[in-house]
Image 1 (cartoon, helix red, strand yellow):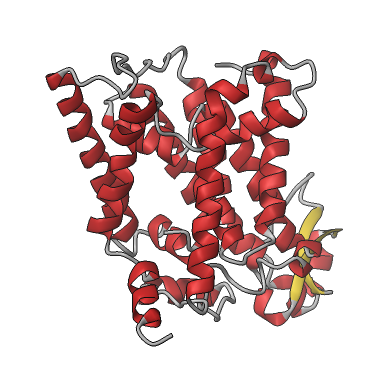
Image 2 (cartoon, rainbow over the protein chains, first blue to last red):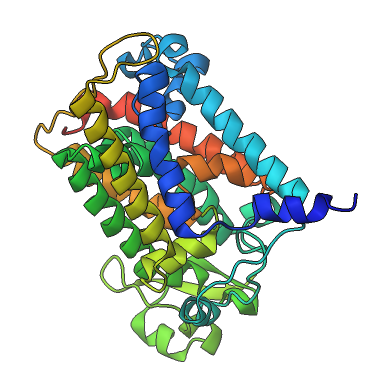
Length: 237
Length: 117
């Protein structure tokens, strides 16, 4: 296998942005020229729904074989591409900016190897509230949001903006409004106490009780609900 | 590009990389579209190439739907394409994220008649 390894690392190393970006951009004309289809990935979700469980819902009563077949083939390709990259190389560590490392370290994330934080994105972690929020709630929001907005990063941010469409510009502003809100308000809350092995639960507490609560409980971002009597606390689980 | 950490870098404005990728993708796509229109290039099947314009309506679906997707994007660290790439990369728990995204899409289809568009 001499000579195999360097080729693998060339193919699967992270490409510089000025190579990756234009290549992604070229999908737009390529798809139009080959099949007169507009590049957009998220519609595969509604095609899958249409294929599996259309129910009586009008939204899923389209000919997914005709409209969405290329789309399903495309995501199958993406999945296989990921598989090849994965088997070509041991999990690689990307050079993450030092500021981001510092910010994430404050949230308790210290392992920057691989493509996602190891302890958060495992089947086992699904059973914790934070794993559930990141994977299941996050996934639900991706599916609901892209269907509602009629597109995702590819359909709106790339195809739509390249075609100078106002709806896509509004959608992209939305992407960032949501992304910033999740990054600065939801993640710190969900991950608080993470490196101490704490998870959060909802507990009713009076303000007085809260003041005398253990320091573990107090590391919570104290979010008052229901007349300042319901607090979300972080406790060992 | 498929890394959760990269998406965090982007939303914290601490790396140019994702902006470079998306920006250069848009410029490349826009230039190719302009070329296709200018030269009147037809598709392989000989059809006139047309991009159906998105209907603006009240714009609410784009603002609200976009924001909801943005929340999910930052939490999962993946948009629909990378969601599948991550499964291939061995982060198999993303199968649960895809299932959940399907439930989310289905929920939209169900609520659609009642949502502002």
